[in-house]
Image (cartoon, rainbow, N blue to C red):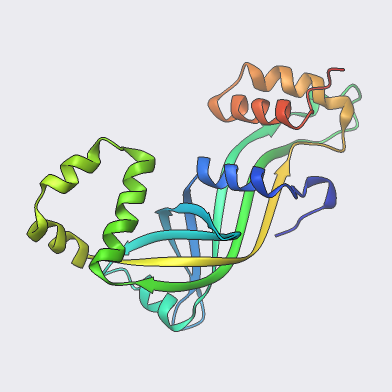
Length: 207
């Protein structure tokens, strides 16, 4: 993606936090005709031996898993909070509107997870993130029903080879930081989330 230096977030821990917090992502591959094919999925982001791993699954009728099998290079796009930035935030009138946002692109190589044990472990990691209490209900469904459900999905694991993190917070326009932070702090859920990130990045305009 277009990534000016002043918007590039090089802190890997912050990028991973954004990915985990906003883990409903777009998985981008290519179909058999070479056109982009996208699935919208909840993903598990973890680290193993210093490597970033992304896990997820698709329904078996979804052809995406076949595309991953044939063409393993893949991109996962994580979209964080985003909000309009009014030119009213500047002390002068020679300004135009823009948009602040957080986005992380994770490039990597995908491999399929097709064995029931591997898919079960993957589902349990998703459950642990979104509804830990459901784990017992899943266990109580019984092995036969679980196997039936597991046969209906195909899992995948992506070894991340490149990470691009863009935290566009108007960093290069210090004169707008204080009013933007004040406005975002009282705004929508996305705006308040951006205000919290501005605090963490020292972009509140306060000494």
